[in-house]
Image (tube, rainbow, N blue to C red):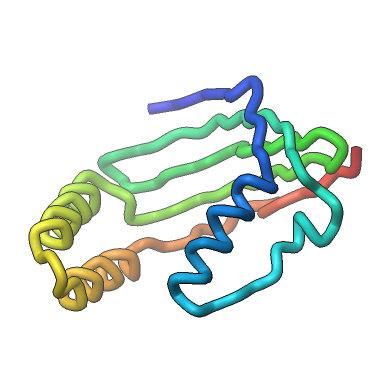
Length: 135
């Protein structure tokens, strides 16, 4: 299977996101700085494009391109090769998600099962892993 997709325009309101984050931090008692606000970014406009392929029988997922083109900031392009992402893995993740949803308050066992599944994935060599271009 191969895929290609793009998102022509995404507008992020960093200030509104910051308000939501601060409410969440107030409830949890944790406070962290927001580097985007600190750097003076109040809004971001970006486009996303991606291409890749997946071999379900082999379990290899290849993301040839995942590019974030952010206006006035630059482009961030990454690649990824992942092994072990086959149909058995997907079914196991779906089952673990169902158990996690059904477990209600006690998510520890289901969370540990999910982490165990994630350990089955392998990052395969891919060059370059990421590139950054200035505007």
